[in-house]
Image: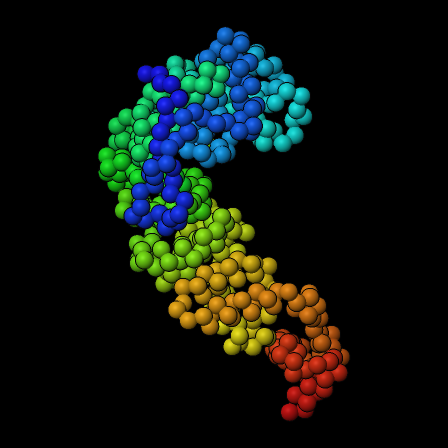
Length: 450
Ligand code: ATP
Ligand code: MG
């Protein structure tokens, strides 16, 4: 089945709604009647022309066709061709090609005359049409076989990801009904969803993530197959779960994704805390948190948990978060509440937070929590805290009037008393009750006498 790309009509995400719940992403707006490729597609199109001139069939494939049809700028442009990996290397020459996925039939092609620095930014993936063999580990095919475009479309996960586009003849090539599903805002597997999820469990999480990113509904048969297979999500690695969840949390319809995770029985495997939460509270937090930084979205959700630190430990382990990510979220969870009481709290108590390396995430989370309060006392506090960051470094974190050396010189015997005195003197200094080194020294001497 080969169709012309000229008769597109309908669909796009609803730009006015950000909640992602209860609304249909399909609007009456029209699809463009042809794909408008930006100049970022020039490199891929030129590769396709070169392959075509050498007598091969080559198309844009998968995500870039989907996104271009939806009017979204594709992240990258993948090419699918009937040229074998060896033929691709022959057409473009060894120096322009990288055999990084040759066993799966994928060759990376560099732009002409490029240095091999930043190759990952410049490389276009050119994959030979293939069909996947059997799957025995629930994640990857045991083998692949080169095939024709139709087989290559059929091995792909969802109909909206199974489209090809021939930029030379301006033709959309649809073996899987992807065009209609894009138009209706529907996410469904290619073929029997039970088989497709049994082959590769990661697809269940991809389904939820694509629905959340595009604001699409998941087709009922695909939904019930996810529920059937949800328990076996555990064969998917933490890194892959983490990668999908990061994208889901920052997606435009994140709340739809979160709802789907719960309804499709996936939440227990990826974010079990959700099961204890009121979806309306999660909705309010997600709404206020809107950010393209997933750490901040995650902190906003975990702050609803009965034990946020423990919840974070679980997520960090499950999604394989980096130490820096875990630390920033942990600081935000630990300290944000104090910033909502910034105006009523001594500077000596809030100052250590204001100089914390993660102050931006702490402030952002505090702002989200303040936003969900009916009165604006907390909002005022958080905004006062934010303004405080304008203070000069010296004013924000002045050198201490007293050091351990000073105490030794003053004859204070070493021991636990030391750090208590130093920290008390620091507090008095920050709160303006000690105003000089001399005053601090006098303060120590009077305490010693007592
Ligand atoms: P994005 O890059 O925005 O996540 P994408 O559709 O390009 O979206 P990729 O993961 O880059 O997704 O994969 C490229 C294409 O490869 C997909 O469009 C799909 O056709 C196919 N694909 C990717 N992962 C799978 C999978 N697990 N099972 C089957 N096909 C897949
Ligand atoms: Mg992609």
